[in-house]
Structure formats: structure tokens, C-alpha cells
Image (cartoon, rainbow, N blue to C red; front, side):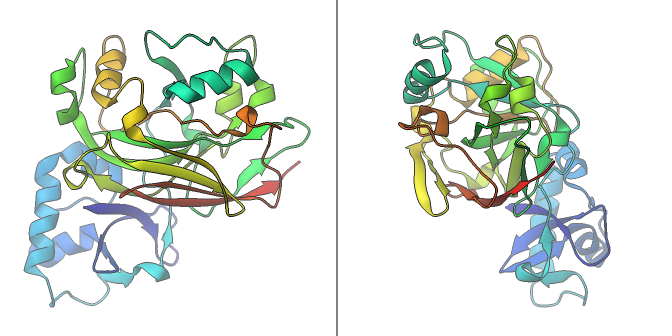
Length: 304
């Protein structure tokens, strides 16, 4: 199931939609059409669990060819917001989770050349999130080293505390695309949150694909282009720590809750690792793609 948060007209908060046959079908209004209470936001849907997505599937089938006017809008006629426009807490970022990225980071960013023995975890605040099409802010007074990182993001669907690896995938609601924007010259004594967490530094979307529609999240191509030129290409099978390992590790000391987001790391090809190094500047357009999940496009604009 392909789920979006969208804005149609003056609705400032955004509405929960399911993409079906090229249309964005409003989930709450769909429920009203079949006499069933369905949620109006992505977080509410995730909270309700699998029964709610099953109810959406039934309602789509029941109204097929006979939906009341105003329930569905062509997907080209809506504005998509980030699937979760305001996460409840910080995004969990995973650093150095692809072997070749470990090597390029050691060369360019003075990180260790040794493969991590445990996941490297940092965070990005909810205020960093922007949608497909929205602008990545470049403030030249703060950074001259604005960098890109395409990542598969995991959306947690069920509370997880001290979860075993064998049980971890049952806690996944779905997947989206995330660009882990980084100001490489804003690291502070080895701490990454200011480098990673500034406003607009977490483009995300354009949709969430539910876990039941992703046969193998550990065999998905992912890629990134800058102004049409490919900079990154790899496959999620090359993660050092896979999704069950990440969930199990995080949940040993931090309870994962419905709607939490784990950005699973980026492959080689970031700007800092290139020779010569490359950075993002106002006027650039960055596209990120993950096979079967979607394509995220964001321009870079000057601020300040």
C-alpha cells in the first residue's frame, strides 16, 4: 500500500491519502463512505496497526467504481507533504553502515577506518523534515561543505523494547526515502547533531510503502543524482547492520514507538568522499531513489 500525506486546497495540516490507480483517495472520507471510522493522519494510522490498513483495503474494494465525489483527487493535482510531516521525536540516523562509505569517510572526514562493531547512532530533530519538492537551505555563512546521503528509512509500526532480531521485522510499518543532508564543516568535537540536524536537513518521502508490499528490503537498489549526474548507486544488501540488527540494537536502551523513523545509512559516493570533493550549492537539484519505494527531488536554495 502506498500512503501519503497530502494537501488539497486550503487544508494546512495535510490529510492522509492512499494512492490507488493514479488517484489519491482520502482515507478518512473513504471510511465515511463505507460507514467505518478511518484516521485522517499518518501517525494515527500507524498507531491503529494492521487492522486499519486492512480496513483501507476493504474500503477501496467496496467502493471500486462507485466512490462519492470529493473522495479522490488525481495525484498530479495535490501537493504531497512529508509522509510524517512532524515526527514525534528525533529521527534515528545510522552512520557508517556501508563498507565503502566507511572507507571514504576515513579518508575524507577523519573517522575510523575500522568497520564499526556496533551501529553508529546519531539523531536529526523533527524540525529537519521537509517534503519532496521543498528546498534544502544553504546558508553560506554557516557551511561551505553541504553534502548529500541517500538512505532507505524504516518506519516503526509497533512499540519495541529489548526486541530480539528474530522478532524485529514484525515491528516495521513501512519504508520511505530520506536524504541525510550533512554540513560536514559543522561537526563539533566529533558530535554530529548540528551537522546533521539543521532545518531542512531531512528531506523525506514522497510516500510510505507498507512492509507487506516490500518483498525484501535488503535487496533494493538506491541511487542519488545531482543535476542529473549520478553520484551514488548501491544496494541495501550491502548494509553492515541490517534492519533487524538496527531495531534490536536501538531497542536495547531506547524504546521504539509507532511512527519512529530509522534512517539506515548511506553508501559510498557522498560529496566529501569524492576526488576532488563536491558540495551542494544554491541552484542544484538533488534526486534520491530507492527501488520500489520512490524518488525524492529537492532543490537547493540560498538563505541568509
